[in-house]
Image 1 (cartoon, protein in one colour):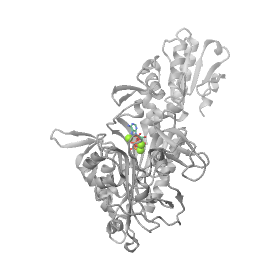
Image 2 (image 1 turned 90 degrees about the vertical axis):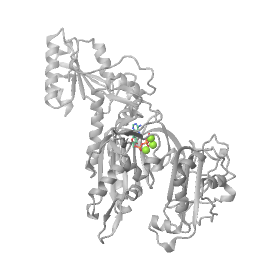
Image 3 (image 1 turned 90 degrees about the horizontal axis):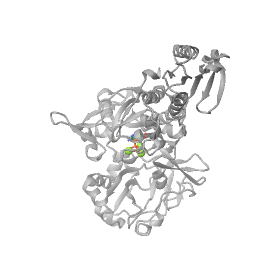
Length: 569
Ligand code: ATP
Ligand code: MG
Ligand code: MG
Ligand code: MG
């Protein structure tokens, strides 16, 4: 590429409204331009980086056995009604009507569309497991779009969905995806950590987020300083109640089941006033005395007021409360009817720290092999005070039992879930098994924020001069910077020859053929973060040499012109 024929668009000044360094540098280096809140145009240089990230993601997904499809960004509302998310998703879902007044949404995610597709296309267990991915634009009407493409409203995501007839098979694919994600972030050259995550409103169990570590990250990650334990702060909080951790063999305390059929009775029971802002309300039903009982959970997330929650979610709330009947447990878990005893109802409410009344209550089996003890509904719910309810803080003992907690900031660049049957059940997605029975499928879903990665990579790789791209995603591998080319035929000829040779060899090279002062050219290429600069100057040509400047190390060296190609072997 010749800069004279390119849209370089670099800026000298740091735009005042850009708060984080990646946003500043993406604007200054001419990677993106703002169109409207949370909406950006990708300029040529930015687009090259985006495509490189996309290709690495694509290659590793394919290597891991996932197959690419492309689903529409515009989705009919009926699918969302079928899954229940037309009512549940909230204001991040952008709804629109076509000319016939038929309602549609701009897809914030694609569980509905893919589940519908698979339910139509896959009919036999022999076709399973099936793992499909796409790289597609998403739209989420974020309440606070910010940090440029880091939290845009329109953004590029890789989303994959896997379908299985058994949980075991889902777990295997989940692990394959976990490993593929590690390879992706390694290839991208990023300092990242997988962390245990909450499933949020998506349902199911088993979830990890992948975070790029950076001070500008919006999430807190809790690490153990003595083991591999890492969890996002919400999850670490959930794992660190004041209760003691017991071994699986210890008997669970018998707890009274509150008569909690409505949100009012839950509120009453927990002594929370109406209008309290509830951050998380998690209702767990489990089979008592059944050690291996899986958790059945409804998690309502978001900043709901308790009475608003009632208006909005009463149906959702009511079902898990009645959910915990024997038949429903049997149906939901596939457990043996005989093994299901009376059901304990575990309710954990984390109110805002500012709220006057707080309760934090966890008991029963929260995770296979981990049982919290010492909880008693009557006694404990009212005795927890504000001071007892806090996030894990640095120095706390790690919930994993080894070491102490260290807290760092992270940018969520990927998120994988074991979804379970939520969508398959709602949308009637099943196959015929070997014995001819209809079997509802179980699902996993796996997201990567492709466009967010570009910003996250800059957060980790920059200096005061600009971006320092990791090799794998640099827009250009090398820049040719001739000094005063328009005054020296020799410089011009050498630069042009080098350019032709590098292009011939398929190396991504940018040739700065502008009539600019050397200082301007250097500043632009350093800003854009090209890993290698080849500086062609009159004086060094006397010795058939040019100067090689390494953007990452800052080192300069003289090399023979005919050894340039060897740099790219
Ligand atoms: P966040 O917590 O940052 O809002 P999320 O948990 O809502 O993200 P997921 O539903 O898990 O996002 O989507 C998968 C991935 O898509 C995220 O891990 C993230 O990398 C990316 N992503 C989500 N929202 C945005 C956004 N507004 N702009 C850019 N990337 C995003
Ligand atoms: Mg979000
Ligand atoms: Mg998140
Ligand atoms: Mg997420």
